[in-house]
Length: 102
Length: 305
Image (cartoon, rainbow over all chains, first blue to last red; front, side):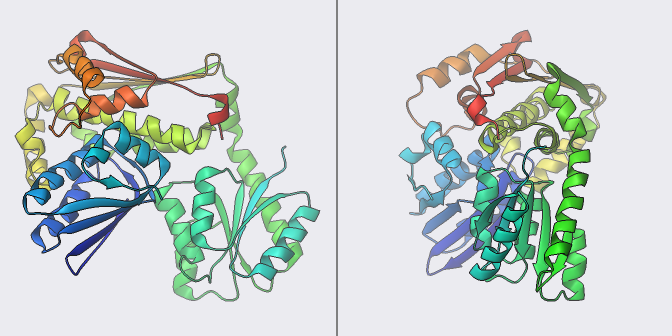
């Protein structure tokens, strides 16, 4: 699993590649903490090359979401694969933020 | 043996056309991609016996492609790299990443065909076990995990390697099974074995690791075991994974009902794993007061690669 993060003009762009499972979800948490500490108000998630996400990974995103919206932040999944789209729909995460297919 | 399927990757259209012609004349089934990104999407959605990939491509280079294949897809896929020259650092990288061969440009067609045939013969030998597994009516295995060794192995990755190498499952089905395995095994460790609280689980990685290590020093926790059972039945085309821990169990009926009734997103810290197991499996069962969880997944004929 590989995470690339860049923050510019209050926009954090995060690209996750590979499998996000319970063993490596802490790496996502560390990157999300970096976003939280920054002045970013929008997190754009690129999940097109992310093969799957475990509930631990989803948990990290939701923990971040709760803290991020309290400081006025927003999340958008700018693109993702069919399987991730289905997973996010199944967990109703598309009620919280925009999820776009790749 | 069926006709081997080869993916040709090069940003140079005339090279692709020439190689495609040579390979088709030698009865290979050929597909093409003009950049690394397209090639990655193709191997995710389709099955190839071999990839022949140019090293010097704009964007995702041949080495980037091979690195991504190994890292993200963990594939045993054979990849021949081709290029006009290879610097020493790239040469060592191709070996480290396990390239099947390197062919110098301009391509000597006979050399390329010799290389392809050698690689396919080796692949065929490697597939003997896979063929055995796929022709048995039922394959089963059990293993027992000491929690003190849990962090040494990524169990879902072991499953990933085993299933990918030996069974022709689609990527989508494989992914769904891996998420389920990850959920079940991680829950057996975190809840059933270590009995970590929600607050502890939300600590940062280093603090959580310290707590886990401390727990594992306690004899009553260190003596607990996790049992994992896997079976694939070709008669019923069903995969079943069962994980049992030696914890106190939990009120699984409450959580199953909650999953069935919930119409809103679950922002709580609990129950998300059960939601995923419920939706991703065809059958979810709990036994022994919640200490044993089992998922079954049908293998649709169309879902095989």
